[in-house]
Image (cartoon, rainbow, N blue to C red; front, side, top):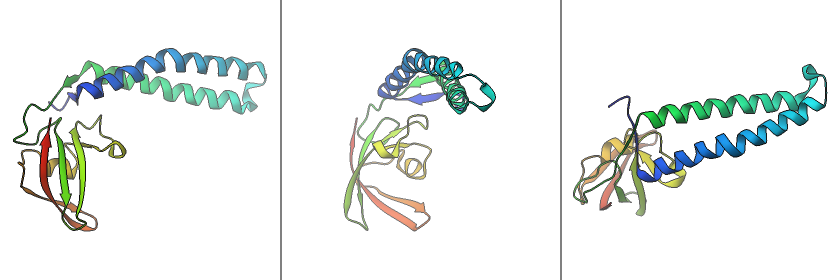
Length: 155
């Protein structure tokens, strides 16, 4: 399982779209940037050329990374609202702050805290897996232990 890349169907679609854009749109844009930069002459002192080459190397690495991930992907979806699993959407109550927050538990490749997607390997993700509505979740953090109550599990 350690070689598998776990993604939700939404995460797989997002990755496939990113790969398609990189291979078509972004490659063409970089090729044009390189063509223009080369036209400036002397490549040793040409910052536009070096910048475009760096961007090209980064993009090609990202393409290879995505292609490797897609070869090992396993799509997971939550099918139960009784226990938290990969793909579950959870509604938590931060007991100390008295705030509700909603997260989707996903694989590491799909995690994006800004989009409220947390990895099942993160401290909170580890604490959530297997829990049921009403359970108290304790997560160790640099500021101390954070306590949550699991209010709801959605699929």
